[in-house]
Image 1 (cartoon, one colour):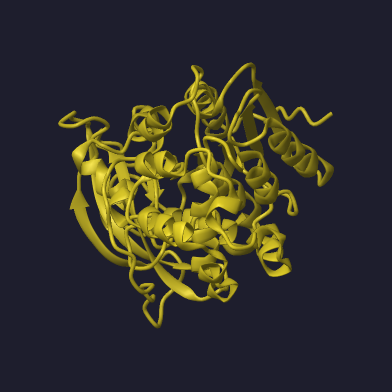
Image 2 (cartoon, rainbow, N blue to C red):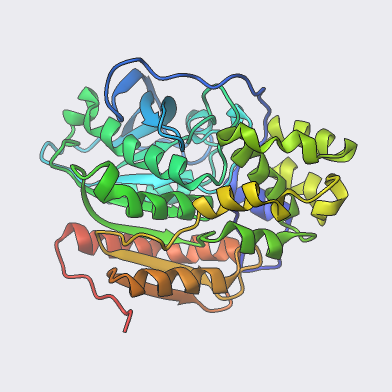
Length: 391
């Protein structure tokens, strides 16, 4: 849902890791084709992958739109990017389906919009994966890069988009020629909002996309309980992210009628958040309380609470091993939330390797945790036995 650094957190530090500046208008949701399967490609076009402006990489990349599924089970169309190392490899190549952290709500914030410009900051973490010879599929999530409000923090929609990005990568002819096939071992990876999305993908794999050969999920800084995260962020540096999450939930469930809870300041802020990226969004929401922007708190209402609990994690057992990590000093997503997810998964018999990052704040967790997470996935691709530590 959000991110932080090992130094005192600032809105700028949060924005640098998670997003890029820009704006884009919200419009009606883009429907999916009437026929076809989740993961089917709707459009595909060559693009480029640059971790920094102008930085070359030995990769090929494609911008896709592909079919996925909304939180309510309806077909939709989601955009994303598939990146494959240009190294001559032909055999089945490992594939990571990668879920980015919070970037914002405007279409220009989408990862696919920044990759050609070198302005998607998590591209530096993704490059660590392509340098290992792994292909990477990066979803933009529902409504981010396609028409409609981004369903930010809606766990089921995010998890399905992550799994369908892997399906789309395996069905892309250009990627297939470079070894991305239905026989590719698949890893799921993400942090913060991406931790929520990757964790949902891990929980949904068995029921939603069982044909994917998922070897494991590396997931960190997970906002597993949105109500607890909202309580922690209310009136703090992460306060703007609460309203972003409300916009995302309302996008998936318009019957929640977010507008009816907003005062004039809240309506103005929602309009701003919808058309900007995370740097500006965090700054605009700094230290605001829910009571500053509402006439009554929607989080106290049964319908809102029910929908937010639908995005809770830990209710299903991931069917492949999980590497779960969290900073002990995370100021945006409480460490206790991560520990509870570990306890819930362990209680259900999941194979979980838990890793605490001492004194790690939110952004620090993403950076410090990325290499151990990738190393753990490399062991899964090598068919080494996982060493869970639930006991």
